[in-house]
Length: 202
Image 1: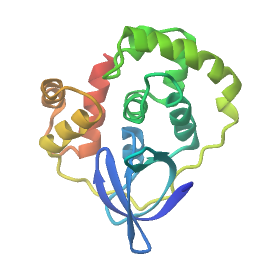
Image 2 (image 1 turned 180 degrees about the vertical axis):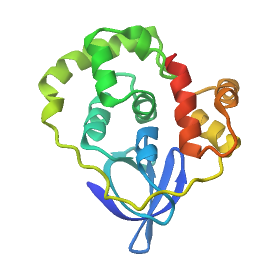
Image 3 (image 1 turned 30 degrees about the vertical axis):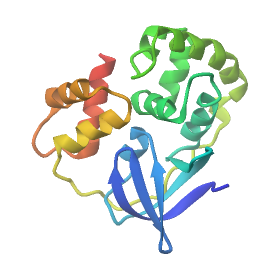
Image 4 (image 1 turned 135 degrees about the horizontal axis):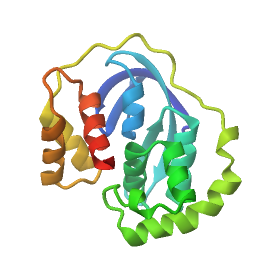
């Protein structure tokens, strides 16, 4: 198993990261929360990983904090919740937000994640509530990525932002509408996507 990667960030295209570790490029899919925390291309980064083995592929998922990785691992144990949907949850809700929604049985808030309907939200509440009690999130130490140099402001590209939302499970028309509603010239890709996802919560 691969527990973490440390190397140079060479690709940063949501939800894909590519990290060059001594000449080997590792493709890693990560939630938007991790993208927000990472700096510019070429930076030295450390990211926690989870290896997901399927019959047709071996996939790596990356996280900046231990809380996110732990929650991801619990989510994919829930019936009907795959890795892509788990990334969508982590991209749209902070770990403590998700826990609060589960504990409050707030299925309306959970249903705002693309691909999660009322029945899936209800299943999340039922299956995750007991797990969260024994999980003791407060005792998990956060392993942040290594400190990075200040990031450069990157010119925003609405097409890339729309593609990122589609990869998180949004329909093309919905993704285009969200990006159009928050687009401003000069925004970085990460900020543009973050603002679009915040619109979903309203």
